[in-house]
Length: 233
Image: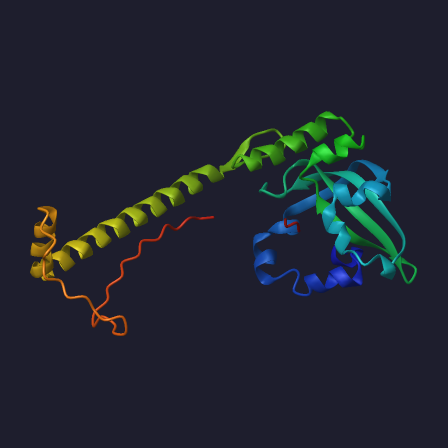
């Protein structure tokens, strides 16, 4: 029923739904026990692309009577996660008619309430504020539920990754310094020339290569800095 509520175009993305793992572990939408409409309002089309830019991907020529809705769904779940929790989650839906049947042709969770507020479309309810808090906390690396209880802290993983990157960079720098020291040790003549040059003797007997010849040995040491740079159902 979940898949069939979407347009035939969107149903193509759910060919393998549900897979064996989803069935066994009750993940994603399968973790939801029940859904009820908590509050809803229809949105005019004039602001819809500012509210939900992804709706620009909808081929409006395929559907009749397209309408948009801002809905708070009250979820009851088996186990709370980043995307499904007990409480109200707000979503924007696009609904259209194809061959006499009404389908969901666009569906996105709300992550920016400020645009809705700018146009006066928010409900200004306590439930809406709690749902917005979940979004804001996620931006700070905290996954919380409807009651602001921490489910898990993404910042811990981020700090661990940053420590690993820093350790790798330090190891690379040490390796490069060791390689440079080895080159100096293996080239005592060049080392003596450097000593002469440091004393102001510029006649150190270095023979340059011609402009058309290439050195028989060319060593290049490069250090690089590596950084770690909805779904919805």
